[in-house]
Image (tube, rainbow, N blue to C red):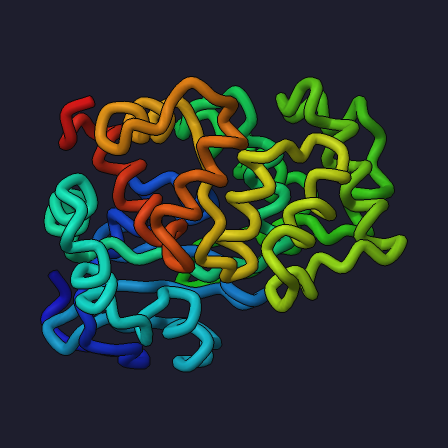
Length: 282
């Protein structure tokens, strides 16, 4: 651990940067450099690290924006109390006291989770890196070269062959198609203020965006905390711990939302990670 904060102190709240930025499968563009984590937040290069003074940041950063990105202003103790009556929820939240649900840019979340379809975390991370390195804006920070996500304009002008050459495979036309849709007026940055159902309906009209990808974009990119992505791990957990089974994943998602309420998606991240790590018996 760094001895003191040599940059901007972001806060003293409990957060596990390794878990949130690298291991929890909610974002895929951060890299680790020693005890620091390097990434692009709101089009600015950032170095995050934990010191004796709390969570610190280097680079041309806005402390308030980083607090929002890391979800430091949310009371996770209150979230634990909200779900304390559910054994699986109580256990999952207790297992990961440093886990927080990030507030990412919706365009970055959309690209990332289109690439996530039928992929494991390591593969998603490698595809995101390849896409950003080839097409994203370049930044320099503390001797490191970082790349942001390609803009809608840059991605919409790409040939499918270029993207396929980066390894994205059949997802190439999906990336181009969603970029063109955004440029043509798709209200991506307005989804956070919409009714969940309407936002979900609009997202699933985009190429390459199914129910799970839409819920990931809404949860991690739009702050829609009731969005509840259902993958194979969550599907097993809903069946074994909540008795939700015998229906489609979309129906499972809707039943989980009805059962867990407006913060269902926040709990989902704890449940998902616990299930994926084998820390909750399925």
